[in-house]
Length: 341
Image (cartoon, rainbow, N blue to C red; front, side, top):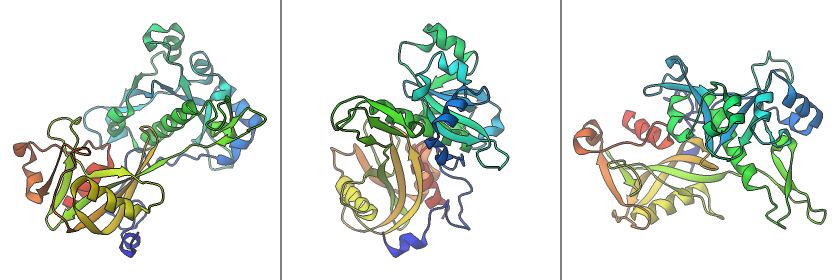
């Protein structure tokens, strides 16, 4: 990354930033209390403690319920909050307690290890929730399971971060129930944050992974480059993005992705901010870059279209049929930050 990237720090890490809050799914501030993951007795006690709460995940959907508007001030329309289950209720409908994943502590008074324990648990996919008497009884008005991408912008900062965290670790745990080295079953360790192979000849340990992906707003004077995929709703254009490949730095990934998708060469790469993206396990690293050469040539295997938009186009975007990405995405904030600059 260039020296400019170091000077142009993340909006969340730099004083004097124009951003007042973190990106959606980030900045929750939960005490993860990682030292407690190695205390099986403490974990077992908290899994039976009526004051603990369980964050359930069903079919990769999160349990939410409608709440008062002020809990998600930046949301459009209605607002949501997580739907928690008590341990006894979760035990009746979710995976066995030994598979619950310790998320952390909340609401403590500041003394060590104080606060309510939070766990994530997967609800087995055995049909529609409404058709399961056990799940129906456990929910008992706790909410409904919805896609986090659809409600993320309607959650408070802490709430969205917690649900993203729970969805990510539950998805990882489900996908690693068998050892990738030898194929034997795995078992949870460290509060569910490690899955260890049960084969005596292997004993491989598997840890949660996060796949880094760059997302970049390319500018050229008073215009910026946006692209769209054919699966997106009509008129939606977004910043360019792609996964970081093995053996390359973040700035190299920015240069490569922009070149591959648009034919544009970029420089002056500056880091802006990051966002957890648990769909299923990415970390979006937001950048701004300036065009230094090349002509726009859309890679059809990557994008359906890409074009330059002038600043004035955003003021009349309804007139020209331009739709921005949703507020849940860091892409929207990269665009709005540039427009405000």
